Amino acid sequence: MKILVLNAGSSSQKSCLYDIADETLPIHPPDPIWQGTIDWTHQTGVAEVVVETAKETVEQKIPFEDRSTVVESMLATVWSGPTQVIENPSEIDAVGHRVVHGGQNYHDSVRITPEVKETIAQLAELAPVHNPANLQGIEATEAILGDVPQVAVFDTAFHAQMPNAAATYPGTYEWVEKGLRRYGFHGTSHQYCAERAAELLQQNLQDLKLITCHLGNGASLAAIRNGRSIDTTMGFTPLDGLMMGSRSGAVDPSILIHLLRHEGYDADKLDHLLNKESGLLGISGVSNDLRQVQAAINEGNPRAQLALDIYIHRLRACIGSMLASLGGLDALIFTAGVGENAANVRAAACEPFKFLGLKLDSQKNADRPRDQIISTPDSSISVLVIHTQEDWAIVRDCWKLLKNQ
Ligand code: ADP
Image (tube, helix red, strand yellow):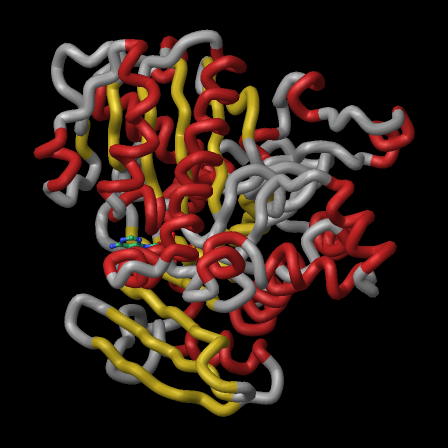
């Protein structure tokens, strides 16, 4: 069975094709037979496309007017040209799409119908950058592959059954009625990491209390009990919670009122400030990329140092909050760009929890771990680094859904 995954973000479009045996799928993935990435940030009106198979890597810069044509020409490299891996597009059995916002409507992945497309479009109000890009991917697929079964896998779904106390903001009751609540994001990654952690720990996921730390450009934590998310740091939008690359995370809402009243801000300017000019970039003045912030710290830049100090402070505070929601902890899991690569961030995040008996193995932490336990055997809490595999999680959901229909 061949399943194509489309994962559209604001700045990139990642796609891959898996050829899977028609039996129970493992948690950990095989290699995809084809992968394509479009980077939209290269230069206005020019997309950088990289397509990879086991034998070939092809890089191209494509001038474009609308994104759909670039997506279509990238997908065509699956069945034509030097990266061809199948004879005909009809060999693709299903297509899975990462969709950022499923609102209150979807608690699980769903087969895409005209009604589902309509809901995704309506939810663009809550995810103005991502949902339209996701819909564009769905429509590009329809244009090329006709009525192939398509599945939407929502970033919000894993958190959809959070207890009301965790999901509800303490504003007015009208907010509850209008759906102004905590939705949470990165659900596919949190769920995959929880399942993979249970496998690595050789324990039943249902018996574990876990905190997953997805630390990429965007960052969020999830508190997981009985295999479900019961609390998370991102909220109504992916702006809440932790300090991120260029997003502020949670700030006192009165600061926004102050900026509106006294500094000439309007909604768009605030949106840009909080999402694009804040976080590591805003405080350091150097970059949203932690590697560059670290390099500036090594050169003695005090703003870069402050940025990292805040990042760690917020991370520790949010881990503490997830810990309290769980009322215990079996494993702390790090994933995504920062979580998988920054040993100093992991060590600093774990430091205050030593009093609970958490013991990090500093050698294992430093040795570029991947899908590994990095705590000592006598640590009361296991610490793991897991390479997140959102695309594979999407494949598994597609496969399960299509099997059960
Ligand atoms: P996205 O959220 O865009 O999917 P990633 O999960 O790929 O992002 O994470 C990207 C971030 O990971 C980079 O901005 C950078 O801050 C961080 N990162 C990647 N590699 C390293 C590293 N070796 N050391 C520290 N940070 C890293």
